[in-house]
Structure formats: structure tokens, C-alpha cells
Image 1 (spheres, one colour):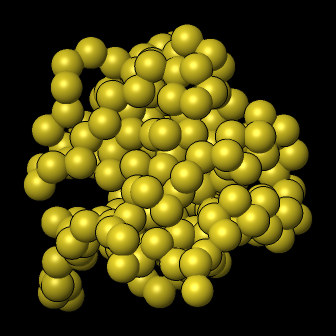
Image 2 (tube, one colour):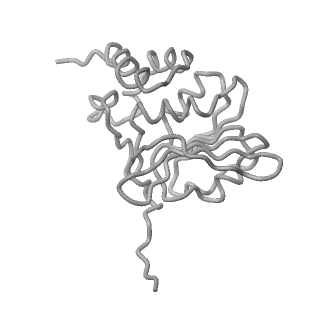
Amino acid sequence: MAIDFAAARLNMVESQVRINDVTDVRLHDVMRTLPRETLVPADKAYAAYADVTVEYAPGRYMLRPREVSKLLQALKAKTGERALAIAAPYAGAVLEALGLKVTRVDGEDLTALPGGTFDIVVVEGAVPRAPQAWIDALAPAGRLALVEQEGPAGRAVMYVRAEDGVGRRVLFDATSPILAGFEPQPGFTF
């Protein structure tokens, strides 16, 4: 039986995005048409619109639709801005559809970033704490949105570069698998 992906996209927006206080109709419009299933291996396409994280490459995950839409709404993307999508195929595609200039980083070293700064940096998947390289990639008034997670529960957070430094605020509770290479290292303290 073939999956009706157009119906699945509509259902995703109506049952996972809109009901979770994502009110940006631009996001609704893009998410209703963007083929999320093409960003995962064919044998996982069935899960592309489910309320789950989907592994699209070893150690790399697309966030649940709820989390990625809430992160993108918090970023308040504007047409023409420069965005950096770190291990974020779906978020990057949504930003591109919104008219942003998107640079993607998805290799083994997610802290080896291209030169320059960005108005928006978005990450799918979780890390214990945002690496300094990601914060340093923010242009003046730049925003970084990601999930920080050290244990079983995490939080979506946003960093914002202001004239006097960088601020951080918690957006909402979120969980996602930790990105490969960012696993917390066991330690010992007295």
C-alpha cells in the first residue's frame, strides 16, 4: 500500500505543528508542501511525518515536527538572511523555502564551520551544550536555536548575539538523540 505523503504532510501540520502554538502561517505553508520523506532513507520514509525523531544518517536525526517547527518559529527568519543549518536537513530546507540563503554543514566535524557569520544557526539533534564555534558563527543580532540535553530530558534554547555579548534563553522542553561526536564523556569529581 502506497503512502499518501501529501495527506501525511497536511496531517503533520494540523496535528503536530499548529496545536503546539506554532502560529507562523509561513511555516505552515512550507511544511504542508516540503517533501520531508525525501530527506531520509527510503526505508524510513514512512516515519517522516510521525511524531518521532528519524535517523537520516548514522548518528544524525531530523527533529520531531513539533520541535523543529517551534525552533524555526522562535528564530523569526526573514527573507534574505543568511542561515547555517548544522545537521539540519529539514530545518535548512524550510528556511530555504522561506527565502533565506542556507549553508549546510553535515560532515563528521560539525564544529568545522565555513567562514563568515550567520543571522540564523539551527541544529537538529541534541548536544549537551552549544559549542563555542556555533555561538561564534552568529552575526550581530544573530540567533542560534538547538536542543541542549545532558540526561534523558532536554530543552530547546536560543542564543542571541547582542552588542554587549551573547544571551541564552530556554524556549521549551524537548528531547532528541545526542548527535554523534557530542556524547557526554564520563567523568569523575570529588
